[in-house]
Length: 318
Image (cartoon, rainbow, N blue to C red; front, side, top):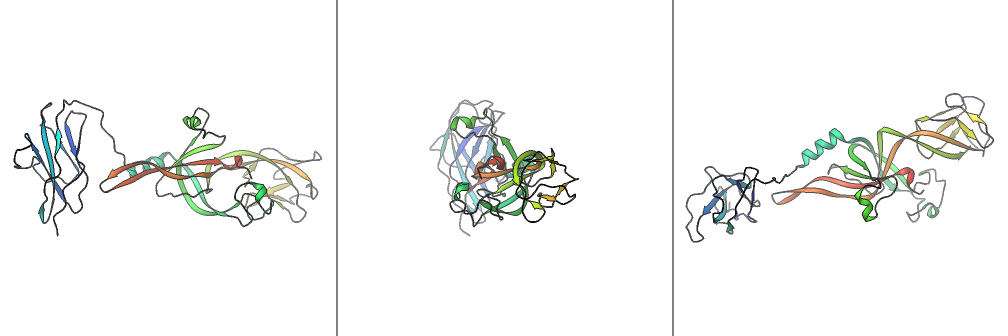
């Protein structure tokens, strides 16, 4: 085994007790480190100031006298011995208690999201064959596509996850950069939950009211809704003013669509009727997730959380 290289990027800071904290970057192959502090740049190296080998990447010098000039070097140690000294770090400063730097870790963010985040059903998006340009409904070759219901995308279950979802209101600072729009959400998620563009997140514990006008089909007893219904707020009323009651005249199937035939009372084929129903809140990812914060851990950065922008599907133009 070869000697490890000397540590690099020596730096200093102070902790809340006013003590000098010396830090450095990880050296490949090192199992521990030694710190040498000299009072003169030309002084020879004697014994390291640490009594036992340092296995981390920092050292607290509790004996530093404020205002004294010192010269700091760090060496790497492994089974083959001790490396040459690092580049010299010169320090002289009057120090006192300061607010410490806080390095968060991914496990802490994950714990926060698990405890405080919304429970979400995740669905992965696949472009529907009817979608020509992926832009607007007028580009779809079939505005009544049975696969996507004119949503441009077909969705496949991808399990459950949790995320922090914050509504982007007009008071949100993102308004200043022109990113505020009705129904927009900032989504904070775990680094392991990689989302794609137009993926769908469905809130498992939160429903909203949605209303739409549809046409009674000419074949079969099922009329498709834009979103899966879980209950109805109001009776259904057709264009002729006739009302129909949930549970008496119609019900819903496993897909959340309207099923007629409970009674003989139902709209005539091709008759328009209005519905108002409860459906689970759903968000489409409209901006790729990116690393929101990271902590440097040795040779690389650890992503602590991801941030994405989502839009309520009810506000999407399709």
